[in-house]
Length: 116
Length: 115
Image 1: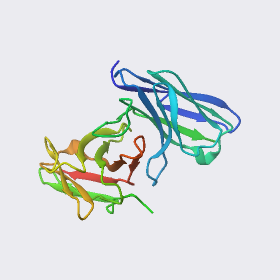
Image 2: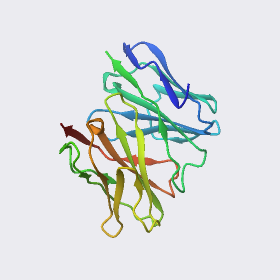
Image 3: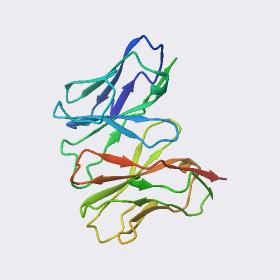
C-alpha cells in the first residue's frame, strides 16, 4: 500500500462505546496529524505528533485520546463521545518540520464517524 | 477572526472553460505559505498547489495556477480547461511560519463542472 491509509472508513458507535481509529502512512514521513471535518466548518487541527512526540494539542476534549507508537502509525481512541462529535476524521502526514516551505500534508481518505 | 476566507460556497463552470476560486487570508507574519487542496466525494484531501510568501512568481502546476496578490492578501486558484473530474470541494489553507504545525483551512468552495 502507498500513501496514508485510514481504517475503518465508516464507524457508528453509541455514546458509551469505546472504539479506535487507525492511520498508517507509507511515505517515510515523521509527522502525523489528526484533523476533524464537520459539516459547514473549516477543518480543525486536533493533534500533531512529530518524531512520535505530541507537539500540538488544540484544546481537544479528553474523550479523544491519541496514540503514536511509531512514526508510521497513529491512533485516535474514542470513548463516551457525544452526537456532536459525528464528523469526518482525517489523518495526515508530512516531513517532521511542519513549517518553512512547502511542507505538504498528505491526507488519508478519512474515517466517517457517527455517534448515536 | 477568520484567517482564511473563501466567499464562494458553490461555483459552476462549463466543461473546458476556466474558473477562478477566491481565497483571501489574514496574517501579520511576513513568512507564510498558501496551499490549495481538492476534496472529491471520496473524502481524501489532495494537494494541488503551493505558494510561498516570498515567491515572486505565481505558482503553476499543470492546469492549476495560483493568482497571488500579496498586497491584497489574496491567493486565488485558477483551473484552466475544466474537466468533469474537477467537480469537488476546494480548500484554501495557510501556514504561518511561526506556527509551523498549524495549517489553517477555509470553509471551502464546491465546484461543479457542467458537461
